[in-house]
Length: 114
Image: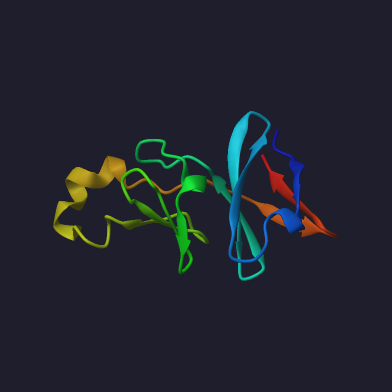
């Protein structure tokens, strides 16, 4: 059964930043995008690269290993999906979205549902 777990103080993830936390045996990436908190799996679905070591740019996270990009709000793959549309059938297994978790802010605490 899933439940909300207190993960961090809001001050630990200022606007425009991201940071990974261990939550119930999982590495969860908190992203503060324009004051809105998003929680995602901290491992890239492509080859399990550390997304928290990547870049956050224009609402997307780029994995440092192979430069796969994911939309923070939806988890959907943006790259290479947008560059190689003719190859989508063969790339399908590599284009999985990054897993997202429900997140909420209560007072100055960030809670994530695991």
